Every structure is written in structure tokens, then in C-alpha cells.
Image (tube, rainbow, N blue to C red):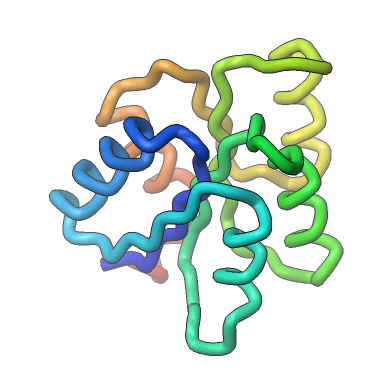
Length: 128
């Protein structure tokens, strides 16, 4: 069982991810914005194995959250999710996510098995 943080502003995406991940036996914490995601990551009691991070969040860009995670020296696997958005092309966003150390990138809409596969690739087998 993994402890997974989902950061996505779309309630339908979050609900779907939570359902799929819990069916896989994982524990899931969900938040709908960057500041709550940062708070969850900084709380002493939280020990996440992987983060699922939407790039296009309302008050801040997901890439800023990813950069902050890496700037703090964390090597937690981060699976970036995006369906496109304002300001950058999808290709630019993916390139930036790769540059900041995203483990995997999921393009919305994605299938349930794509999420499971991305997490399996992102998280070393000894963490499972």
C-alpha cells in the first residue's frame, strides 16, 4: 500500500483518482490547490510515497509546486498530469516537468490503467 497525495482542482478528476487508487489498496489524500498541496507535503505527519500533480491549478502553476518540492531536496516521485492550459503549450509544460524531475507525465484524459502504470513506474518496488 502506498500513501498518495493528489493535487488537482477538478473535483471529478480527484474523485476518479481516489476511487481507482483506493481500489488498488492505496491510501489517498486529496487537495484542490497548490497551497494545500504544499501544506500537506510540509506537515510532519505526512509521509507520501508519490504525488499526482495537476499542472494547471487556479492560484499557482503545478510546475512551481514541483520546483518547490525539488528545491527542498525531496526526491519524492511526482506524476504530473495535464490536459493543456493557458500560458504554455502542452509540449513546453511536459519539457519543464521533465526538467524539474517529474517521474512520469500523464496526458488528460487518461485511463485508469494509465494511472496505475504511471505510479508503478514512478515508485521503486521496495516502497510498495
